[in-house]
Length: 279
Length: 309
Image 1 (cartoon, helix red, strand yellow):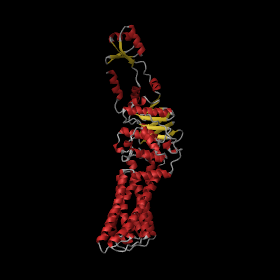
Image 2 (spheres, one colour):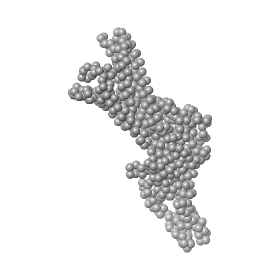
Image 3 (spheres, each protein chain N blue to C red):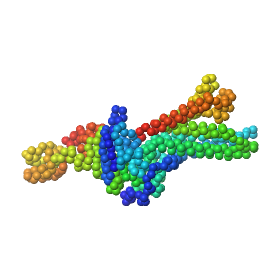
Image 4 (cartoon, chains in turn red, purple):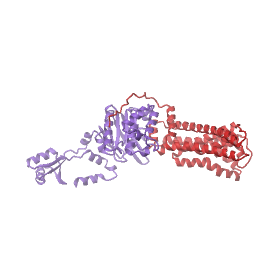
């Protein structure tokens, strides 16, 4: 049984510090080498195709319907904003849930380097998904125009697109920070969905309608509301009010909401990961 | 070489590891023995930087674990074979380790072969692994970087007898090549046969250390015999005449004399012996005795009853 020797058959490479690039590749691989990770990717792809299909179907069935690339890009960010936070959460919490952190942190004792590699890997992943979504938008746009019998509109609002992507990424990093604070998959998913979906859609919008002060306060505590004056999505304001020009207050609100939902969770989470006992 | 100096870890009012100091030397297998909850795993976690010590420090060949460049290449660690992602295959687990350490992919196959995991087993998810298979994978994971030091927490757990024998040979070979091996266990028999040095821990403190012989000698339990003969009454009389105490144990007797003395008494009184052996406490008795306070059951008492029964 022990005919095979412990010693390596060929000399192994010299021992050097683990370079960051290698950690990055390992973390990238960890996102896709489990059934859960692969399922999430397949669901993301499926959702993108489903949304595309629905819009193309509407274009085919409705004679008066036409849609431009700008609208496509905002439609296709919906499935991404629904699913990608789970990726950001899982890359962190999985290590604690499955206790692989014992292995990960014994192979690279600098926990901050590991977490940084995770963050870069998962942000790169999110950007790749956004690019895929945009490509889907281009294909969908051509397809919808063809089946709907109208000329495709290829104009796209660069500012809105840029802010849209920035918002996705900020939500993403926020989810990553919350996951580091809680170190539990279900808790983190609940907190992130309540913060990023439930509160803006159900609570803030209601308060917006009822109270005058809400319009002043909510942007300070919600990133989506804080960003809308900048992204030009003001026409979607729930109370139908005119889009305010971004002034000092809007900038302050944006900074405050980012500090609250991105900087604070990431800082607290990093502290917890650094100090906690791995067992 | 692993050097632990004054290591202490306190949780609230509970001291899990209490001023532990020892050295595990290169070229030797050091057994770390203690009952459940004695502080073995906590000590090992501190060694590899997963738990911060309250006081003291542990160094590996002179440096803190966190200061080792590419620690997987220097120290092979197996703390918990079950701490692997259920959804990954065995091969994938080793591949991730090889990637992190910057090793060629061929090393993965080499390790799978070493621990006798077949290609089809390596393709299965960890979820479907038995504890013994996980343990083999964990040993492969610890050895993949060809480290100089091995830290293994309960590595024999879940291995079948053949597997335990295989692991013994493997660790022996590893130590003979000059490697340092520290392995923990709560099972004495497992460690007794392979460890050159033993460290007994109970209640977070070291209660005894050294080779098997020095521990036995230090506890001074020599000079006891267990004897059975065809004429116990006559032998008892002969032994008592020489001033030894005799007490019946089962079908035989326990005598406060070395076996040679008992044999001489039997010869002189023409009694036929059917069984004569050293009745001194074995390592297990000492182990149980020294760690009695930390045992969950009152083994000292059970043991006393067992002997007198």
